Amino acid sequence: MAELLVAPSILSADFARLGQEVAAVTEAGADWIHVDVMDGHFVPNLTLGPVVVAALRPHTELTLDVHLMIEPVDPYVAAFAEAGADIITVHAEATRHLDRTLQCVRDAGVRVGVALNPATPPEVLGYVLDRLDLVLVMSVNPGFGGQRFIPAVLDKVVRLREMIGDRPISIEMDGGLNPDTIGAAVGAGIDVAVAGSAVFGTPDYAANIAALRP
Image 1 (cartoon, rainbow, N blue to C red):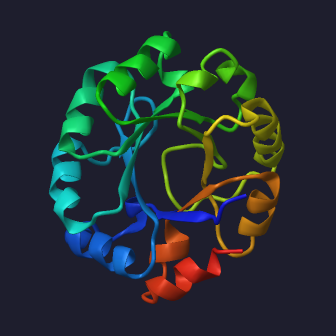
Image 2: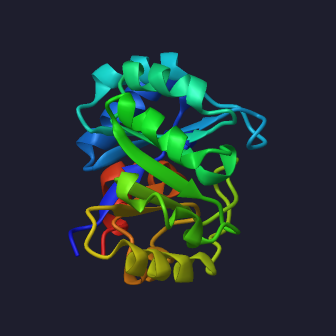
């Protein structure tokens, strides 16, 4: 397995200093920047839109990993791609026509991801795996940072790894990851770890990122 990638989630950053925060975690050794987009409808929180993604783009050359927790999603894909997203991840639960939504993302010229909430089985991806670059396994219920890790999702990662086989698809996990939980997640088979409070919770971002690497 390739080295674990760490994707700090700006949901836990200082929103008054987002550009500086993104630059700081880039300098501290982050691999991707995870951008949580919430609509107050699909999830019970509101965050940011394409204008903010465009504003962040000049502050890092890292992959901008944009996680759309919004419903409907198709009308907004192009705007986030044009804003500078490198990966756009949509929720399987947020669209009635998942295959069409994934094609919409691919047509926008970015990498394609699907997110699964904790109660969603991996089998929903059985007929779209060949459209994917990334599967994001939510290890908390989406909406807020700082929640407790849900161990039951580890089995989902194992099953996804079997389903993916030799396809070049990354498995990302988001929610409750910290030095105490990262080992089990990596053992199950994740490639990318999203971390919010575990990175931004104390000022030494480099040490916090290093603590998440196996």
